Image (cartoon, rainbow, N blue to C red; front, side, top):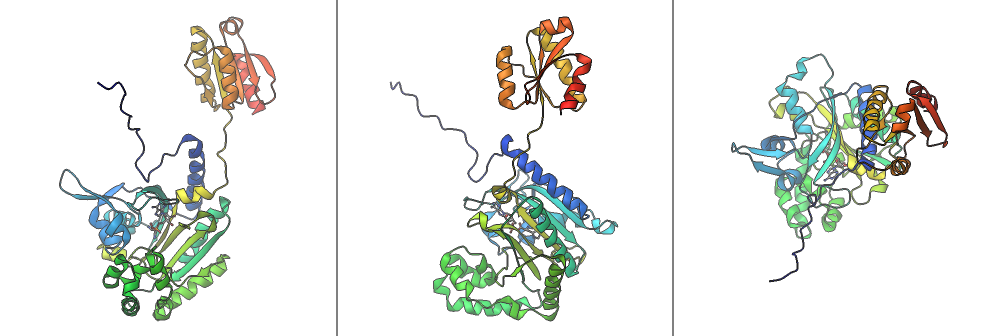
Length: 422
Ligand code: HAM
């Protein structure tokens, strides 16, 4: 019999997912707070939809010819035999919720935001995860190109407030159902001529939706796509006017931008405006956020004919380029020795927390010396020493870790000393 033990398979997170550990979570919280504060300031309110939805919501909404729907959805059949999908994006969920709850009958602006996880089964790499987080913003019922520009300005402000540099705003128009068919027809004809130079996926897209060839990451397809006709020469008068006004409002808002004629975005629902903010600090997956107008989704879902626009920002990508450090809070470490001191320490912890002083007391039976060095290592602002002797005398040692000063004080004076040195 062999004496060697078989190698244990280590437990690990699923490929393409990642833990956000306490050290990093502070940055996430800061970004989330900044985003929420800003959006509320512009009249947006949070709307929380479920993590999973009926699969056909995304088939209909995101679009049958997108990479997301054809290749990337986490879809399963539940015990009731329903086809369920973990949301790959948030936009269709918001449209569904508005229709389901008839939010359009209320006087409030239909402006919403949400921050949460999305799921796409794509090839994991830097900046691309299978579970990732989006900051999502959506507006319904506003047709005017001024909102297109304001939403871009809001995204730009968020990035600036977070100290993002080297970001560039790209804009385009993908037309509408009136003008896009002629473009698709010409695109199809062009793609057909170079069929053999396209990957099998793109060869299929010639028939289904030639616009989706622009999403392909294969180099030879990108080379061909760069030579395809541009949608800008096909826009109808309404779409052209909309785009011109959108650009002039961007000027009014003081947002520099570049017109990128191949920016068709990887989702089928876009009409008129599309935009992305890219950053050179990101590498191959350089889109920090992307969005656009989708004026047909509401009526396609059987709801009222409300135009819409929105964007989503990738949290992982944003955080990877932020230089901010999580803020360390000032806290009190309560070091105790002995059973009576432990009881007293718990009383102190409860008292100080109620007074708004972050307090840490640990129950691992360390020596006083070890507790002191631990408080130091953890970066405590103050250490309160509670031993049998202190309890008997009613006088406690409070050490200010920044100055090294140690005060002996009565219980009732401790709070004042802490607050004065905070
Ligand atoms: P999207 O371009 O598919 O648009 O995604 C928006 C952003 O999410 C991307 O720019 C990127 O930062 C991030 N992202 C996407 N996929 C991944 C991934 N696998 N790993 C990490 N980050 C990722 C949408 O989702 C639309 N719903 C945006 C929108 C809202 N359009 C109108 N309203």
